[in-house]
Image (cartoon, rainbow, N blue to C red; front, side, top):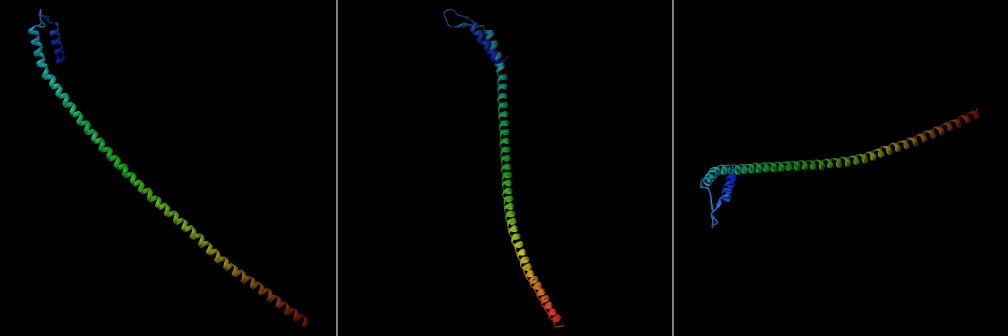
Length: 162
């Protein structure tokens, strides 16, 4: 029997005991009270052992919970550090990519500008050469016309003289 029930039984024995007339005292059955006190004395060590075991279990559970909490916190800190590191790497990679893109855009613009300048220079050179060639062709044509006209005049004079 557990101690609580034994104490309740002892209380019932006292409450149900007969009153002694003209006093506030009661007459209890000595054997019954002694038997209950002995039973309580025997049950107390078991109750105390159970209480000690429960306290020990509670402390073990609390230590386990604290260790798990510490482990979880450590894992969370590691995860945060890893994410932060990865985030920093991503940020650095993004910055480097932006630099490369900016440099490529600047190079492309410079190349485009240089290409346009080069093409303009080449076309101007070709245009100048073609103008010179056209002038030469015009002069040669005119020279040919003039030579032909002179030859025709000469032949006409030769024909009038003959």
